[in-house]
Image (cartoon, rainbow, N blue to C red; front, side, top):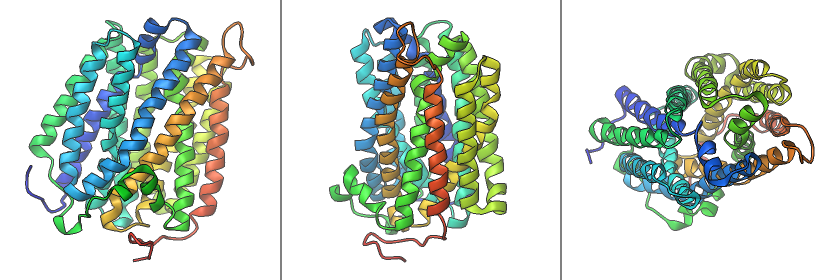
Length: 415
C-alpha cells in the first residue's frame, strides 16, 4: 500500500470515481435479480417474498460487518479496506453469475452484504479530507457519484438483461474488478497514523458501535431519522421491479430507463442543489425539505393509476436526495476525527436493521396486495406506507436538529 498522503483535492476525485464504479456494478443487477429469482421460484407473489428476504439477508450481513469494517479502517486506514472490498465484490458477482440454483444465489447475496460494507469507509474517507462546514456538500458529491453509477448501472443492466438474466452479473464482476485496479493505482490514504484508533471488538461489534449513537442526545435523534429514511427507501429494491411489471407491464429496459432518470435527478440534487440549499436553509432546513418531498413523491407513486403518472411522481420524490447528505453532515459534527469510521459503521448498522426488517415487510405487503387472492387489492400499499414513515422522519428531524452539534470523544465528552 502507498504511504499516507495529506488530504488534497485529487483524493476526493479518486474516491468519487471508485465509489461510482462500485455503484455501477450494483446497479447493473437491479433490473434482473427478481427475474432470476422468478426462474428459480416460479410465481410472481412468491418471488416478491423471496426478493425481500434476499435483500434482508444482504442487510443482515451489513449489520454485523459494517462496524467491524469501519473500526478496521480507523485502525489500518481507509485505502486497504476499500480495495479489498472491491476485489471481494468482483469475485462475488462471478459467483452469482454461475449460480445453478436459488441457494447459491443466497450465498452470493450474503457475501455481497459483507463486501459492500466498505461504503462505511467511503463516508469516513470524505470526513477525513473535508472540514465540518463543507461536509454536506462533500456527502452530496458522494451521493452524486452514487447516482451517476445508478444512471449507467440500471441502463446497462436492462440492456444486458435482454440477452440473459445472468449477463448483468458478469458485467458487474468486471466493473468491480476495474474499481479495484483503479483504486490500487490512484487511491491515496486519507487517515494519518496519528489520527488512528486501536481496534477493539467492544466498539467493532454492532451493538458496541450503536452505543456511540447514544453519546449525544441529538445524535440519537438523527440516527432515528436516518433509520426511517432507510426504511422508506427499501420499498424500491423490495417491490419496485415486480410492482412496475405487474401494474404497468414494464420490461427490464423500462425499469432500467426509469431508474436512470431517478439517478440523474438524484445527481442534480446531491451534486448541485444541496450546497445551495444548505447556504439558504442550513443543514436542518434542507434535511426536512428533502424528507417532506420524498414523502410526497412516494404517496404519488402509490396512488398513480398509470405508468406515466408513476414516472411523474419521481420529480417530488427526487427531493429526498437533499436529506442524506445533511443527515450525514449533522452527525459527523458530533463525533471526533478518530471516530468517523466507527460512526459510519454504526450508521450502516442502523441502515442494515432497516434493510433487514423493511424488505421482508414490504415484500409481504406487496404479496398480500396483488393477485386473485389478495388480502387487500391495493398494489401501491407499500409505497403509501413508506410515505407515512418518511413523513414521520421529517417531523422528528425538525425537532431533534435544533442546535449545532459539537464533536464528542469516545467517552462522550464534548471536544
